Length: 341
Image 1 (cartoon, rainbow, N blue to C red):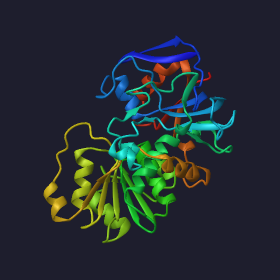
Image 2: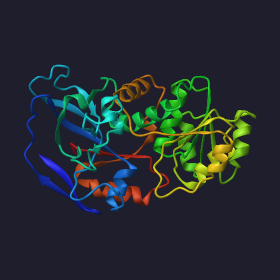
Image 3: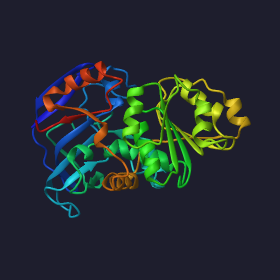
Image 4: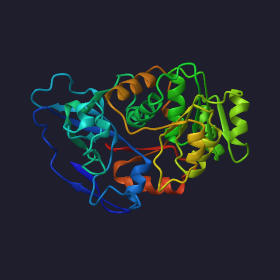
């Protein structure tokens, strides 16, 4: 079979390697679609602090069950599936208490261990999540980032009837905004400095889309939600400006959830955070229940995935996909790799 290997930053090779045989408890997946995320781009530029080379990438994925290993009975050949890419120890405190997304020895496929960018991939059956037959394989490859959004929204508890603000209208931000609404939020506002991204958010049904280059963030909060402002603010941009806005304008005693990954050390006003008794929380990846809810939200139409697909590339044009993203940063949401082409 053909396997993608990034041998060094900016350089991708394709190698012929043996098709794996699924061991006991494993499943062989025919990989169909792979999504490219921001972390993959960091690896491409040599900027990911926890990835060494060579590395086979790919962690946002859909595929078809090709073969079952011994002892696997809960899946069937030909079934549409996706894969949870965490590799965990199962022994540390978080793992023992059901929080394996926080494993002390966490590895992620495509970064610290082999990713799915091959024509076939053998994986533990427990990491495989079935997709509905009605879901397209393109949408299936986007369940992983949607699960990120589901887990992030849940970090604030039950958002039913609440007013939610999301900072940053990239793919994750738009998915968080849609997920919050799909999980019962009353109204959702999203901000960005790109009209193109905000237009995409509006296309996905976000109630209020605000360009903070043109409108003051604080005035937008009260203008759209009234004097009580937002119940929860999700920072999906991850920089001093957005976190500064959240802390400065959040309603006293409300909650801020950091979803994005900061590129460096943050410089924010913790005195205001303290004085306003704000709850600053964070979100890290997902668990099985988040995948299941993500699939339900997409199947029900409460979250739209297809509008976020910007472009697709054949498997051997993996490098072209990265170059396309670099050249079209503002207009690109989600790029998919068609592995079987």
